[in-house]
Image 1 (cartoon, rainbow, N blue to C red):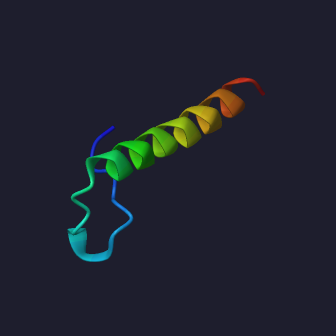
Image 2: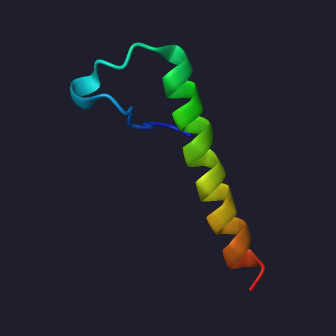
Length: 40
């Protein structure tokens, strides 16, 4: 996924672990929505 916004305001989120965990969270939510729509 591209262009996942970080949790820090102003773009000062230099903690790689936080950015990675947020990107996995966003990817999981998006995948869950996709699977839910396809299962109907």
